[in-house]
Amino acid sequence: MITLFDTSIASKNVGDFIIMDAVNEQLANIIPFEQIVTLPTHDTFGREGRRVLNLSEYSIVGGTNLLSSHLLRYQQWKFGAKDLLTLNHAVLMGVGWWQYQNSPDLYSRTVWNRVLNKKMLHSVRDSFTEKQLSKMGIKNVINTSCSTMWGLTPEHCKKINQSKSNNVVVTLTDYNRDPNADLKLINCLLDNYSEVSFWPQGSGDVSYFESLHSLFKRNVTLLNPSLTCLNNALSNADVDYVGTRLHAGIRALQYKKRTIIIGIDNRAIEKSIDFNLTVLKRTDIEKLNALINKEIETKIRIPFENIQTWKSQFV
Image (cartoon, rainbow, N blue to C red; front, side):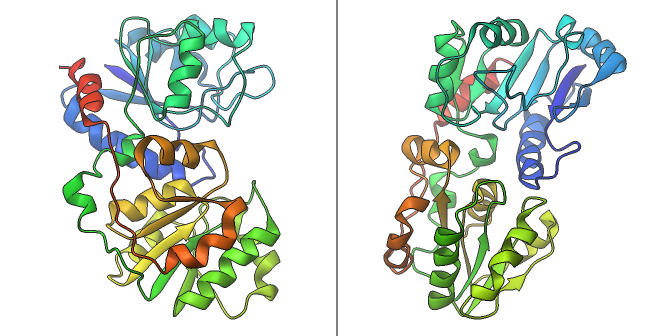
């Protein structure tokens, strides 16, 4: 038996479901005969969770930006002092760092060295995270990208259109707002696409969208905030994706859609540096019109050898 820390449990962000879709798909092939018991990361896991961890050979952490340099100030992975008694053999799977931060403080170094498995390789989603762990003396780390990207092979990417479609799905991010730049984003899409549809990935995205709505040049279709609705929208043969939500963009790439991610934090920017994801920084939003109207060849560089090395430890 193994434990899987599932970031979609009690999550208000549908991006966590996109991540766990990929995690579960990969684990079904990597460890098909193990019983997998899930525990949350958005809440502490209590006595029964500690019992499960004691019975598990190891635990796997489904990739998201769970790691932090200052756990006493910000702790996205919710575990308590009692939980640390049994949480000592976790294996990272495409996990990233929460924003650009300085070196981890003493308390955080102590906790992460306690929590993370010392014998198995950890999979992280970018080189910044790899460097942060290395600063703590955690060297058994390999950069694999996020598991959501492991299927973006050269053959897959060749099937993605290089030229603009007629329709577009757009996203905004409620917790990282820039109303001026985000309004320019929406109106630029309205200038370039016949139909613009807004998909809310987070729980506050609709209210943020509505606060800008009166300033749009024309109507934007509001989609249902479910992963099924996004999947249906991306099933349209004539649609692009442009937006600030990273994992909605990766979902679009999974559906072979031309994708421009508007970079608002370290996650998209680091993925652009490491893996050649098409990312335009929001501070450069004035360049979006030209980017939309140029040919974009999707040539994502996925470290498949690293992925296979990480997977091979489970055989």
